[in-house]
Length: 247
Image (cartoon, rainbow, N blue to C red; front, side, top):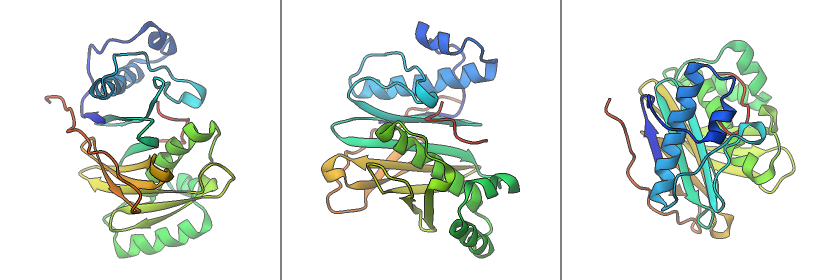
């Protein structure tokens, strides 16, 4: 169940435990924190789950209710949360980023050698796509899907990605863990790039997922993958290195 917003909610209520987590936060951080949790609680409500506090835990990972997997993301002009029952999905990871080039220093820090070779070729062939930013976003989605399964940090150099211009990506995990790869989908729309991963419970089949306007449109990558149909999104009227499941 995905929910998204393009503007912050000025009066989104927070639980006491969430307020405590914002003790030293500035105004902008409070707005994005509250809005993305409003998205999450709306999504949880669609699963029949009453509002609960979603408190940042280890490395900032959201504390989801028992029996739920989920992911959050926020950047300028976009806040989103996606949730599912743990009986349906093993893990979720979504990310959104501004569709702008990465600074050179950041690009060097997040890529492995074969990714840098591919980025140079992709930029020459399709210069309208900011492939380095897309790679960054996909690695953020990988980390968000990885962390709930392991409780462990995953560095940028511990996953090697290949990106298909048709809108999919594949991540090879270069460290030991419960999974060795993830499959995902990406989209560039307007001034944002969206990436997402969903792993279905059925035989742990890896399912790709695309986020656009907050809707996670899941598409199977194997015959064993049968995700449920997502609900329509809720909308209103109107970076840096990863620190854990944002945020």
